[in-house]
Each structure stands twice: as C-alpha cells, then as structure tokens.
Length: 216
Length: 252
Image 1 (tube, chains in turn cyan, orange):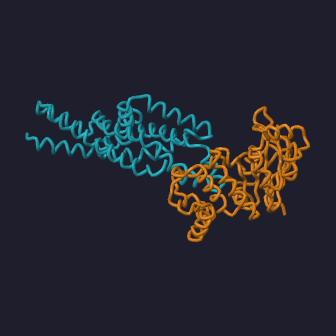
Image 2 (image 1 turned 30 degrees about the horizontal axis):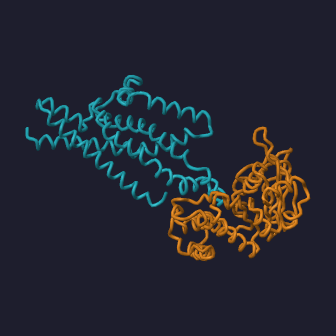
Image 3 (image 1 turned 60 degrees about the vertical axis):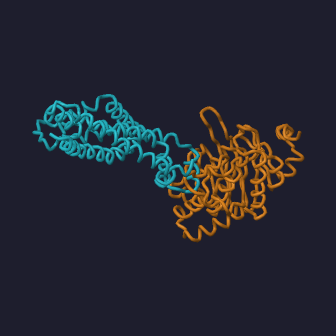
C-alpha cells in the first residue's frame, strides 16, 4: 500500500472527524448558552438540575458517556441499534458533554460583566432581551474567546474518542492501517493531520480575537 | 406641574435603614444639588428615583404620572411596560460613566433613541452631532470609549442621556471618578445646561459648584434631609449644627 493510499484513507477519516467537530460546535455552543441561563436562573429547581447536569457531564469520562448514548437504547429500552446510529450517538454524546463545559465558560463571561452595563441599559429603556443581545453578549464573547479556543482545540483531539464505538473517523482509520501495515506511518500522518487541524483552528480563533480588539 | 416628586420614601438594606421618610419635589427648570457625607443615603435616593432600586415605602411621580404608590403600607410599582415608558422621563449620568465599550461614541448616543424610542436614524444622528459639538467632541464620533479621557467619556455619557430628551436629568457624583483638572470640564457642561433651564438633580461633593449652579441644595445625613434651602443661603449661612460641621470641613 502506497503512502498516497494511506493518506487518501486518512483524509476520508478526517472528513468524519471534521463532521463530528463541526456538528458538535454547531449544537453545543447554543445548548451551552441555554444551560448557562438555567445554571444562573432564579428558579431554584432549574438551577439545581443544571448544576447536576454540568457536574455529571464534567465528572465522568466522555468515552463512558459515548457508550451510554450508544448502548443505552438497547440495554435500557431493548431497542435494536443499527450501525448508522453510531455517528448520531457520537454527535449526541459530544454535544451533551461540550455543552456542559461551554455553559460554565458562558457563565463566567456573563457573571464578569460589570453591573453598570446593565444599569446604563435599564435607564436608557432597553428591554431585557435588547440588553442581553446588544450590550452584554457581544462583550461576553470577547471575554470568553480564549477559553473557548482551548475547548475547541481539545474537541479536535477528542474526536478520536469516536473510535471507542467504531465510528470510522481519522484515528480509527489510522489504527486499522497501522495494524494492517505493521507500520508507524499511519499514526505519524494522523498526528500531523491533527496538528495541522488545530493549527488552523488556533489561527482562525486568533483572527476573531484580533477582529474584536477594536475596543477594550 | 412638578417634573418629579418622591413622597415619604423609606428604604432598608438588612438592618440598615438608609432612607427614613424623605420627600423631594422638583419643578421644571429647577437645579437641585444633594450634598452630604458618604453613607447619608443620597446615592440610594437617586437610585430609587431612577428605578435602579425599589423603595420599601413611598410614592414616585413623574410629570403627574404616579408610577409607584402605597398599598397596605408598602410600595407597589406600575407594571413593567409602564415603568419602561416612565423611564423616558428621566436620564441618569453615572459616576463611572458606564458607556458601552463596544460601541463607538456615535453608536453610544444613537442606539437607544433608534432601538428604544424608534426614532428616525438620520434625525438622531444629526442631533448626536449637534450634541457632540456642544460638548467639544465633534471629532470623536468614531472613537471608542477607551480612547477617550475620563472627562471626555463623562461628556459622552451626558450627551447619551440628553439625546433621549428627558424632562429631568439626574447626576450621581459626576466628577468623583475624574482627575481634579478634568472636573472643570464637566462642571462647565452642567453649568451650560443649567443656563438652558434643564431640570437637574445633582448628587455631588463639589460644594462650591453646587452653590454656584443650583437653585436649591438639600443636605442629607443618616437617611434624612437635615436642611434644605436656596443654594447660596444654605452654604453661606447654614442653620443646622450638622450642616455647619459638614460644610466646615470643606472651607479650609
């Protein structure tokens, strides 16, 4: 098997990794914002529920969570699971897990906003919704970009955990190739792909940070 | 008709009775200064007047509209929609400006008139330019707050309050966060507004300024109004011992 073929198969796996990455960000960021609202809510049961949610999702391994999402329907409800459910299970597991982390990042950003910003908006007659979306949230985004970048980079590497329920993302492919070829080359190539992936992520996030540096 | 009236306000934080049955009324064109030692309750009075704090007891009336009234010995506020409308009666200038840092100076001025009051953008922009010119900031409309000095930021925040066309403007120690050499700018702006008969209530530590600019001064201590009267009289011939000793500390 030539290097070209190896790379081709890895790239196909990378496609799946990218899909996991993209879909996780797409759903976990908004879900994380909603969870952070619940976590800061005045309604005590809701706040407690979100605290428990965050605590469990952060306190147990992501791999275990993937197993629960994937095998749960069979063990708990006796439902037959199909191979096509694998990727869906991975996305659900990742979204639930990352939303917990993002929720705490959103909370830290929102709670760090000075009271004066809310008061100025209130006196000017902004509604609560306007105050949040026009005044508070844009400033929160600027504040939380560095920790979001951290999580995003971790997510790139975490996509390899999909391996545990046999989703053919890049790491799964690399392991199969390495075993078949008795070679380190697939691992090395996969490593380089992950690194480049993260390099691009870090670069993009830096650009966004720069674009938001027009104010202090 | 009175622009603003607060009747028999009481406010307690925990065990601390901050305001003990105070009433204040302001007529159109009045400039009223509120002075007193820190902890006297003057800032709380202002925060209750601007709906940032709720009163335990008392009534609040803007331009004849009662937006907080007494029921069974407690203050009841008008519904939220009505309160939001009532807010257009007044403006508030904060001690530490509270400009929106992610908005340019122009957007700081224009956003609320357009998105809250639903006014025509072109008309608002023209008014903002005129206001900035008046404040000596005509070249700063594209600047962001962090690029301005404290005095300039405070002038922007005054303009931001004025563009809403309030019938009364409250100031919460507008010069306290500024370097002494910058306070003069702000005081001049307020003096100009007084000359144009803007109705204002100013909480301040600048006694000389209060004497010069206001019609009336209220001296507060320990949650009560100790003395109230024409500005010059109150500063030059205070009657109450408490007022005398407070003013004495400034005249050295």
